Image (cartoon, rainbow, N blue to C red; front, side):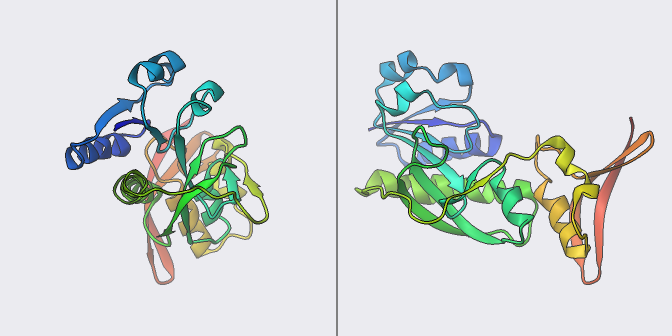
Length: 228
């Protein structure tokens, strides 16, 4: 069986090599660049599955119409379709959800669902949560799909769509009715590699926050000061 995994994040790339070692009876291929996801290149491999853990780019219709393309999304779908799911859940005070394995289709995060897996993210920063999600995808969901014949099911329930967050929304001053818990959640939900971290601005100074820790009635965090 031939498997393509298309991903961008380093923790997913690391797990690609681990799953490749674990399941040597399968032939694994890795795609990490948008330009390499073409029908011509996919056809040469002729994979049985293409998995997309944390793939931020559009998947061409000609690919998901001709191959089994499975994406992974945080959220108990159809609740939480769309962008920045982790941040949109935490800012709503939601600390438990699902990781869904679903078919790629022309409706954003609207495909039939193969599997759902529970996940909790009440503590830890976004980077650690993404790494936890990656382990569930690579060592729970993908193996189960490969080893079990699963008939995907149509999504049921009220559709709730999240908007992708902007850099400007990382300003702590955008937080409504702030308290210690909300500020702690705000800092940690943005604390990941290549993600716009929580910040405050004062005239010509920008303060960026990371590594937040909550101690009873106080929060400690690292703060980096920049001149704008």
